[in-house]
Length: 355
Image (cartoon, rainbow, N blue to C red; front, side, top):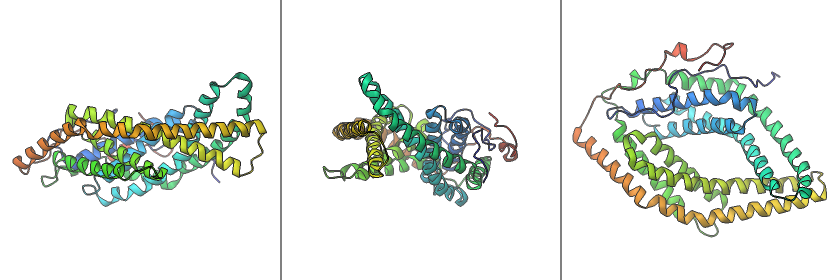
């Protein structure tokens, strides 16, 4: 079996240095989608080497973010993109799962160390066997992750995205729907889904129901960020509120996953000293407290999301919709960054990563 490669991936994406392109008023929805995808691929290129090395957990986190944004963009513009790109969404979800196992352990190790740093010095030693166990699981998960990154399926997925986004000129058809028309519709639809998910919650709701709210909030946030240049300052407050909502639910999810990990270790009969098992019980209670805190803050953060911040953004989107309706058909703008030729966008199999 081929050894996993911890060095930079040979598949590189040339192009824009930043992730957020400027959006001209006449840009088509497909042009915007391809430009966004190009930026997220550039982010992948930037963070994959560090995620492979594994020294800084933030690199893996940012790599996951780039894949989440790719998956979200493919879903957001599924009616404007060619089928080969829409079909790549399923592969993106598989890549997310492969990266997620390691990320979960990174978070749990960080939480364990933070929790133990507040303990008296004499009690910290009890955490060492648990930390060693989590590190061993992380090493196993990393080996699987590196195999996934090196797999033919992942490299083919990246090449599909890379080649499909290398030429924006084909997305500038006069008949193509404009971003200014499509984006308000998409954002409104995602807000409705988030609202429905929040309203379905009650005191007996499962963690999966809360996680669904988090996913909906993330999807709405990504959609607003995608159209940020069109929405202007009216989007800023909404994005801040969505980040607070997402962060609170994320802390809850991390605590829940940490508690499940501890329960799994205890149930598997892992040989650990009594003092470590006692510490695990205290840590599980800490995770439960964190979950309760997140539950209490959800109602307050949701009020901020659906209040005047949403109303301001909704008014701006209505302006865009009204303007597009009055203007009628318009040739999409070509005022977007010029991507590199497709044959230059991919480095050769033995080449170094290009920036």
